[in-house]
Amino acid sequence: MNFLRRYLVAGLLVWLPLVATLFVIRLLVDWMDQSLLLLPEAYRPDNLLGFHIPGLGVVLSMLILLLTGLVAANLFGRKLVSLWENMLSRIPLVRSVYSAVKQMVETMLSDKGESFRKVVLVEFPRRGMWALAFLTNDEQGPVQQAIGKELISVYVPTTPNPTGGYFVLVPKEDVREIDLSVDDGLKLLLSMGAVNPALPEAATQSDGLAEAEAKP
Image (cartoon, rainbow, N blue to C red; front, side, top):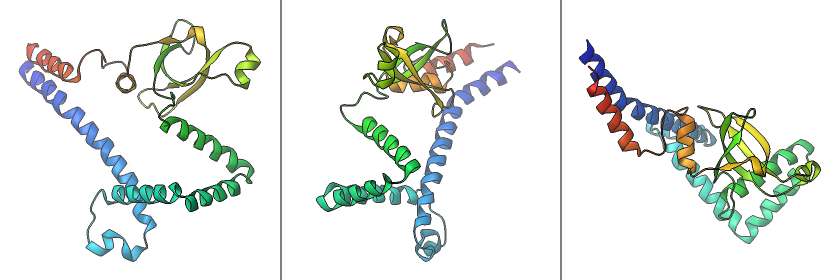
């Protein structure tokens, strides 16, 4: 029975990452296919072709983004966007959410921005326990001035779902910079520490296969 277990483990090392990747891609494609609901029912691909083609929503979403970018990039489009933003700024709750999200997106997509482009270590949730975090802002603001200490804004993600987490202001001297890329930091979080970012992915997989073959 040991040889069966050995081959099962070797098979899992090959198929599990592939299946997990396909599962995530399928969720994203299904989510973006919801954009097809924007089309009139008579012109939806499912009704025109008589069968469903996965991924057409991705194409439609990309076209919508490209057309929106083309319109917003010219003078007339900028005036429309400005008019739209002026309208939203008059709505109390909407203006706060819209402005915060817009500033966050502009900062993240800016070539000069540093948000979410550096991995650091912070003591969280208490002293002596360290957590991976992403630097979001190192500029001083009203909160930092009120504290009277130089603080750094970081985002501490949860694992294995990094989309949830905590916004924390940490004294600059308590933040430890780490030689780790954002991609490697996400791998470490998603694997709950099981993946060693210092090792190449191919070497890690081959080592796992070798270990499975070596087990009696």
